[in-house]
Image (tube, rainbow, N blue to C red; front, side, top):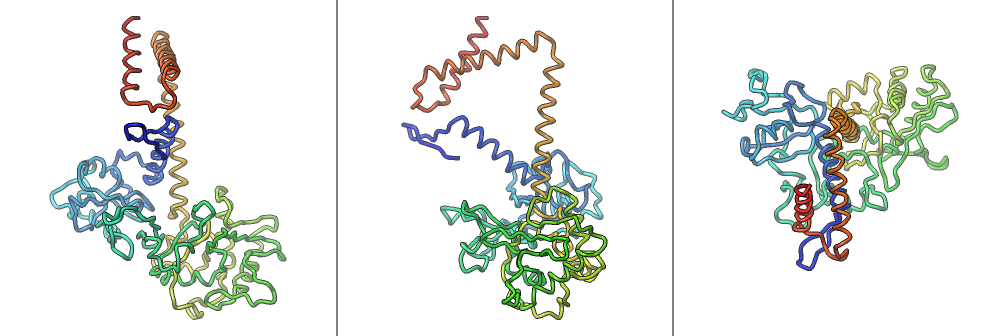
Length: 421
């Protein structure tokens, strides 16, 4: 939010700027919290696919425990708490043996024997450290904080200059600096999913957002990453992408998919049919869409960070062999659309809209249930405030900033006016 300085050197903002900043802060909070009101501990919900997690360094300085939003607000108020954004497959630790004598105020009757949450995963983020440089955020040694990017696999955060690229300019962004990728995989984690290099390059984001389209017509392109005919199309691992594309075409022409349907990866995924169709594509005939034995294939041994395009998960093969491979590598979550941050934020926005509509409805119901006199009192109060505020704006120098004293005077005038009445 931009701010000017008045004659006394104090920051000033317009009313519109102030209201917009409040709206932005509320939206940002809702996106991080996923619409969680923070009124009950999430422990009883088990290992949640994704939720906002915090680390209390006052109670667990070792950084080996995480707590949910409600416990952060109710049980650890006044403690040194770190906001870790979101974590997958996590169950609230508050009150377990890691907290010694401290018990959860919201769920004091947790199952003591099963409260250790053995499936939770912890990294140095829980100690307030991030990136390969193992530095805190905000970094007290930096005057200006650097932007960080989260890996969708290990969920650690990385400084742009530490993600093993030649330059931060290689990060796919539009002209305004907004990201053109949906997910980022760090260099270390890319070694675990080297099979992704067997897919056509359209699953990877570049300077211009790629759109991987899948069509059902026999002569239509499956992925718009088809190289010219005079060039043998090869991926970084020297595996011909035509093999993948031809297998996708064969799957698409299967009777289970009608010729008049089309699935586009990279466009809005609001239509659930698209996701279902993509799974049908990957599963048809139980044939691997890669068309190669990825275990035996020549894959580039040098791991690189990956920036993946929108809806890239929908293109992943779901044949029995690949499903078994995901399970062995403990990365089956890549197939779950609800695991992605994009889907998490989409659901958070929907919950926010529902909450605002519910709030407006509650306010309207409250007003409608009032008697005639109470309604008139409220309406008259609003009218008096508008008149007083309009009068104030007409009397002040528009080049001068509105101070706290001015605002207090407005309400003092309203109070005096009510006394005279």
